[in-house]
Amino acid sequence: MSTEPYLLTPGPLTTSLRTRQSMLRDWGSWDVDFNSITGRVRERLLEIVHGSGTHECVPMQGSGTFSVEAAVGTLVPRTGHVLVPQNGAYCQRIARRSPPPTSSARCAPIPRSRTWRWCTARPAPGS
Image 1 (cartoon, rainbow, N blue to C red):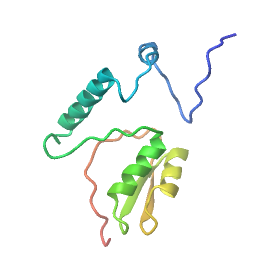
Image 2: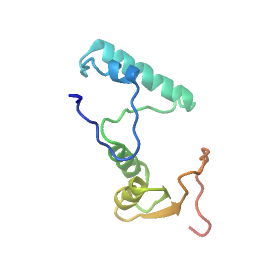
Image 3: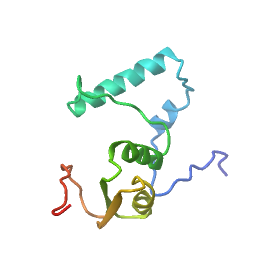
């Protein structure tokens, strides 16, 4: 019997041995190497989205739900709308919890097998 603890999260999750080994080192926000790595990650993410010089990248520590709620709560105006691709329990939770109190969330049922492409969101007709 294995003595390693089980990582229990919703949905399928696989963590490679390489990733697990890299997580064996403890990092602290005061650590020079940690701050250097974080700085490089922030810079690279801005490069990927062509946001260098015009945007900032702020890493969020926490669950996916926490990060989505923080982003929606910060970026969606109080009278704004959120379109949630509906393909499971996680999306249902986001639709219930993420919109600001006076905005609305619309769910779009999407089959789990559907392949997604990035797109630019536009207001729905008549909204």
